[in-house]
Structure formats: structure tokens, C-alpha cells
View 1 (cartoon, rainbow, N blue to C red):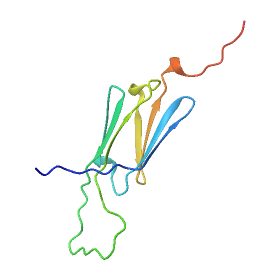
View 2 (cartoon, rainbow, N blue to C red):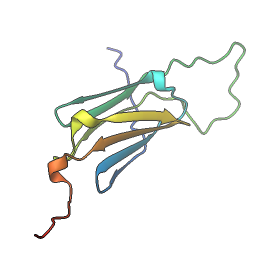
View 3 (tube, helix red, strand yellow):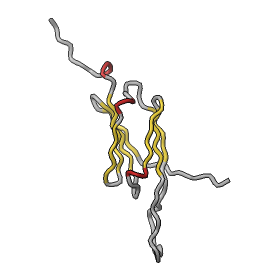
View 4 (cartoon, rainbow, N blue to C red):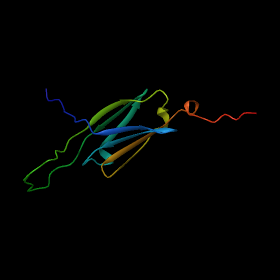
Length: 111
């Protein structure tokens, strides 16, 4: 059986006062090649590169191997999965997820 192999991309996950931000490096991957979905609190990313070497291509040296990527991340309980947004630019996918309003810090006025 010929099972597809995926590489795990480099990623950072940061918490901000009102949201979380996931940044994932996807070198050589176009945004059309990225599949991103959420089920429950699990965010899953998978790519399928459509790149093909041009005719007459001859590899001389390489420190970079084109790969398909996959990863899953369990979002914190304070995250609101319905607020997910994503953008992909310059080989970096940025995913934003807002914190649920009831979990955000707020100032309480004293009367």
C-alpha cells in the first residue's frame, strides 16, 4: 500500500489579550493548496502541492525539499472556533481565532 507521507511544518502559537494567533511556515505552497478545517476544538491543516518541475529541469544541489504538510492543533477552551480567519502570504499561513467574549479580561466599574 502506497501511503502518502506528510511533513510537520514549523509553527508558532501565540496568545493575545483577545485572540490566539497561529503562524505556520509553508514554503512553496500556494494558498489554493491549503486545506484548513475545524472539528470541535481541533484545527487541522493539510496541503497538497501541485508544483511540477519544468521541462528539462536538472537538480544540481538542494537544501530544500518540496513537501506536503499536515498538522493538528487542539484549540484552548477559551477559543471561539466559529471566529476562525486565515490568510496566506509569502509562504506563511496566519490563522486567527478570537477568545470567547465571556472569557476575556474586562474592567469592572465600581458604582
